[in-house]
Image 1 (cartoon, rainbow, N blue to C red):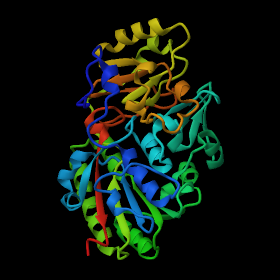
Image 2: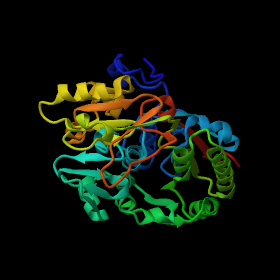
Image 3: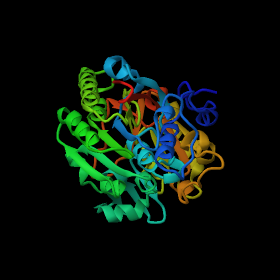
Image 4: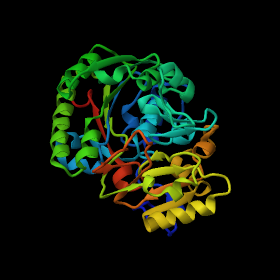
Length: 403
C-alpha cells in the first residue's frame, strides 16, 4: 500500500505508518556506495546508480539540505542528470537522515530520532546537531565532541570504507562537535559561500584519484524553506543558484573515474498552524519530560499509569489535529527502516521511542520548548510522513561518460 498522505487522527494511521512509499529509499543508495568501496560489504544494487560505481571510483555525494523533489522544476540543469526519487528516512529530518548517511545505518540502528532524542540511560535529552543536552532539571549543557561521541557511539561509514574520505562544507560547520564526531579520520575542506563550492570541490576531486569518498554538505536551502516556505521567491532564487553551482562543479571536474551524486536529507511542506503544548498544562502534567523527536513527529514519554489521562487531555487540547500512535504500532521496518534479518536495532531504541508518536495535522507542527527558549516558528517544516517531506530527488553525473 503506497503512502499518499497522512490520514486524519482516528483513522487507520498505524497501517499507513507501516507502508513504504513506492520510491526506493535513501538507504538503498547508501548501501551500494558502501559496497562499491568496502570489499566486506554486500548490498542490493540500485538501478541507475550501481552500474556507475566501482572499487576504483572517486564517489562524490553532495547533500543539499531540504531539497524537496518538487524543487526539480526550478533546477533544469540538475534535472538533466535526474535518476529517480528516493524516500528519505523517518523522521524526515536532518539529525536523523544525515546520521543515516554518515553511518550508512537506518534510524532503528543508530537511534537518533529527531532534533531531540531522549537518552534514558543518561537521563538526558540530546540535541545532537547542536552538541547540547538537558538534564532532569531541564538545565542546558554544551558537549565537546568526545562527550558527544560517548553519548552517540556512532558506527561511522568512513571507518568501514576501504579508502580515504573527505568532507567538504561551510567553514562554520567544520569544528562543530557533531561534524568532528562524524568525520573521524576524514579530512575536512571548508569554504565560506556557495560561489566557492564548485572550485573547491573540483580542485579536491581533480587532485585525488579513486578509490575515494567525498561528502559535500550545503544547508542554506533548508534555512530558507523554514523561514519563508517552500513556495517562496527566496527558495526559488536559491534553487537557481544551486543549479548554476552544480553545472559549474561538473564542468570543472576533470578526473574521469569521478561519480557525482546529488541528493537531499528531506523535503519540505508549508505550515499554517503552530500548536504549542505549553498552552495545555493538563497534557504536560502526564509527561515524564518535554516532548522529543520533531515538531512534525513528536515523541511522548508518559508517566506510569497516566496513559488514559494523557490521551484524554491530548484529545481535549487538540482533537483531530494531533494523532497519538502507540509505540508498538509504529516501530518497525516500515518507519525506522530496519530490514528483517539485518543488523540489530539500537539497544535503547524502544526506550528512546517513548510511549506515543504524535503526528500533527498536515498543515501544523507541535512544539514543547523549555522555559528559556520560545521554540521554533516555521513557515515550512519537515519531519513527518507526507510525500512532500519524504520524497527527495537523486541526480548522477558520470564524469567519464559525460566527456
